[in-house]
Amino acid sequence: MMHEKSDSDVTSLAPSSPRSPKRPVYYVQSPSRDSHDEDKSSTMQNTPSYNTPTESPSHPSYGRHSRESSASRFSGTFRSSRGRKRNDKGWPECNVIQEEGNYNEYYGDRGYSRRCQVLIGLVAFVMLFTVFCLIIWGASRPYKARISVKSLTVHNFYFGEGSDLTGVPTKMLTVNCSMRMSVYNPATFFGIHVSSTPVHLMFSQITVATGQVKKYYQPRKSHRLVMVNLKGNKIPLYGAGGSLAVSDMSGGGVPMVVVFEVKQRGNVVGKLVKSRHRRRISCSLLLDSHNNKPIKLNRTSCTYH
Image (cartoon, rainbow, N blue to C red):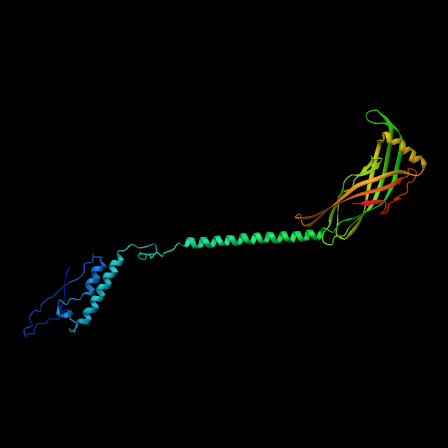
């Protein structure tokens, strides 16, 4: 596009005349507004061409013309940026320099190492806790309940003739008695649960009365007196009935044996660490059917295994 410069923009080099002849007009071709080629603009700006005397640096109007050219270049650049695509915020889009390297691999390795640390910490905690439980379990092993059978009292003792369920005639025995024993828990840091197998009162390997210790909890460092009722109703003796009758009539007493097993369980660390002990007890005694006084039992009368 051709633009005509005014007289104020261009100064003629022709000699002045008194008649003020018409000054020559110079035409300057500016870059097209529709051109967005920045390379051509930069080529035109970097290669100066002085087509007119006014573009010469020695001319007095060179500074003003230079400023106008800078303004023209700035407006051209603004027009070119105005034609670019804009993002959501209204800023012109530009090419983003993509850095080399895969950050996912770096952070992936870092996450894997973190998982390894957590796993190692968990395994170490389990091992330490296992060692701690073993130490506590070993420390609880010596603490066994101290059991002592004190006495046995006969409340009812009846011996007579009868028949079993099949109708076979035999000697029959009915017994009702009670046993008293003492239990001591020596443990200093845990209580125990005490129970037992059935308590058998036996004559010549025949169980004539049975009973059982009721399960209970005993605190640490404590004593407890336990009572066990033994009952037998019309127990057939068969061939052993004759020897029982002889022993009872002689007045020396009927030889009996009390056999049972006491079980103790201590929860040292909740239900994870438990201390278990069993003691088999066997006591021998002479039972007098005519004496209702308690029969004393000492340490020599009983065995504890």
